[in-house]
Length: 442
Ligand SMILES: C[S@@+](CC[C@H](N)C(=O)[O-])C[C@H]1O[C@@H](n2cnc3c(N)ncnc32)[C@H](O)[C@@H]1O
Image (tube, rainbow, N blue to C red; front, side, top):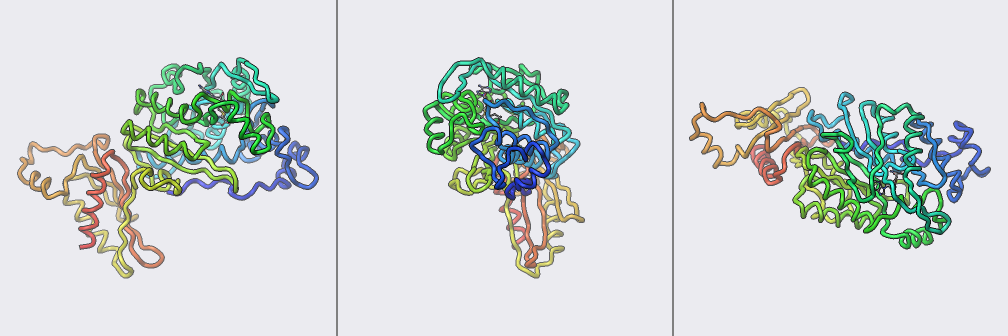
């Protein structure tokens, strides 16, 4: 499955937007350019895009982070793809009937993720959190303020402006309290968490970065210190979420977080591996020629995402990538696809596993509770009394779930894809793929 394409892959045509939105026309310079150092212009761009492309109305304060829509949309689109390819219908496609509940940690004044998520998917609901104690950074001075009361007030207004009161709720959290407050929210199980965390370790670090970019630190894009600074930076913040997830485990299907630094990804994979969390996914979100962000997701559940979703970060050393969840066998041009599919179907039907073959789409789905193809296991099966050995029927109990698709490529080669759908045991999956290859190639 490929990622859902963003409407912002092409550069935004400001002149066209100005013709469609009179408020945007007011901030666009006469030469058709936008002054990104002008907070008012940046804010209006966000408002106009949300309105034109998603029908969303927004009210944004001038002293809070103004979210760039394309970058925020990229993250939501990836979360959609992640959930779609790990649903228990195993279709790898959007299921409009699926009811999805997520938490946006640190939703900010805009409440952008819940707004975008709900605008695109009618059956999604959210809780957004914001912490209550913070430091506001204005015109190079540090002052203390009890925020995010202000951010939450705006977030609530944005929910109401879009009639989303029934689908998005807000919770004020304490800086030292839980980042993932499922119990306080009254949520037993949810589908995902997401977060655009404060990236910087200190005000000094944020200042230095703003200066290096020659951007005024209070520009609408930079955000206030409470939004951007956290002790230990993003690694510490996300590590806190990982620690909380160790207790919540599969009460959440996917825990996810954006990262502002590429180097954080390797550090966080180290934390996941230390805790033996084997099911994780990573991606790079690229916007235009300059902006790059990264996302890491982890799950205690055993539904495995596709390779395009889980391994979308090619610059990472191979040993840090999650296990390849797809195995491809190619047969030379001229190979009769019918011979392959009949052979495959016969091999799998003769094994003691659950196997469903759909001839019309050359695709089959299978589940097994253990290795039933090795010589030892077949010998054991022959010696077992068939009246006392019962095959489990519930997919939830299965150690391995797989999907096999056979198709003829445009160059007439035949491609057999074995996709890992479910399980924690990568050795079992690899052994299964090896058996399929031996049977089809011999
Ligand atoms: C970088 S901003 C992201 C805001 C918004 N989600 C966006 O993407 O534009 C980080 C947000 O996390 C919030 N935050 C910081 N520490 C937090 C905590 N301990 N619990 C919840 N939210 C927190 C900040 O107030 C801020 O709104």
